[in-house]
Image 1 (tube, one colour):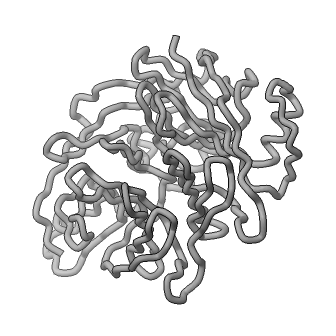
Image 2 (cartoon, rainbow, N blue to C red):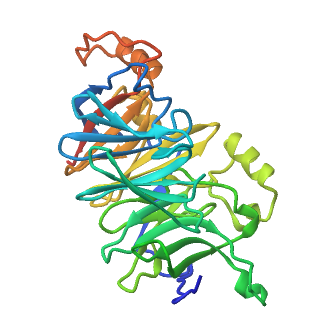
Length: 362
């Protein structure tokens, strides 16, 4: 592959905003309204283990389960099961779907095992598949029809110097995924196998993050990676000295609550930004008001009984989010908070529940 352009803006670029996360003194809670709850139909033909990635349009919900069903599911916004991709190694089947993207007419699904980009219509009817010589983990369409790709690509063939052998975490590919047009964010090879969950926010101007790096990046007009937000976990931030230590020690310190090693699962809407971080063997999230520069922590939101424990996703509304909640966590929340008026009986082996909520700016 020929690299047509090379750009990298280092982390020393002026960051637009700092997001300060303070575990000790921050107990603020936002004004949250639970707008609706969707119970996904559960049967042997539509059984999800977990929801990795979610996309919502006006009347459909696309849900990718990477770890268990290894399929992309399609539900109505009322929770009715409509369709799903087929798992397997046969024709028109997917063995290892790792990410998907929905545009006005097509659904793109990358199957890592077959190295194929699979094309479906929006009802998940298979159209075609094209084999591509890349390693793709996450991807999003850019405004010029190119693709932002997290790729774990390390090309050592035909390289003559150590600088040629640089490993990059992100790439910009041509529309057909045939050509790398730009390389973004050099990365240490020793961290190559460490993946992030949903590191790209798939908006019109994508945001993305990097392993062991507290910057949230965007692209400038020349499609160079620039840090838009710097996340400071006060008293818990991963230092450069930490990065020099073994991965085992980094994860041990994170599990013990000494540091926060990375951020992931970036979601964004009109006024709010959210991201997830692992801390003390659990996952937490931040909701950040871009207008007021105020940070809300999931620990405080859950403790105040405003929402159940879950994973946050953005939706196509002003300040709307979806929380994907396991049946166990949902039942526990309903038992402790009788304000939802839930009459449906939820079983522990049901599909995850979708809690649609909005954050109202004061």
